[in-house]
Image 1 (cartoon, rainbow, N blue to C red):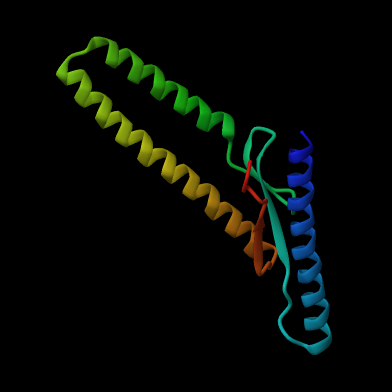
Image 2: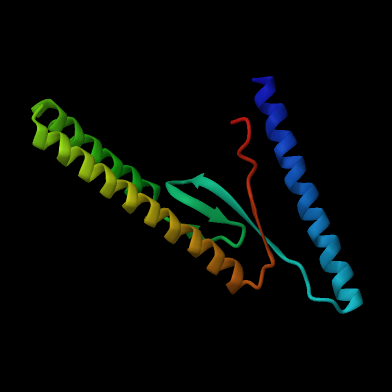
Length: 133
């Protein structure tokens, strides 16, 4: 448990360091007249959403994604119990379809994060540190 607390404080410290550097860059750029540097932070898997930004925008619906995954698993299990060649081919086909669908859904979520950053004129997007979790 102490290791988790240490990792969490390390990740928080790193993010705070980057935010502090971004604020210093913004202050310097305001004084020197150079384009400003603003950062939007992104936290993943928060309150049934794919992500939430530091601007307060919730992106994606994790419940919807999990529901689609469960439905795919149910269909796959049912077809595998059938055991026929046609069922096997159908499992492959719907697996490919689900893979493409989930990739597209996550791509739409990532585009929404970028649009949110552009809307607030942010120059950087910072994600939470997901290493060693």
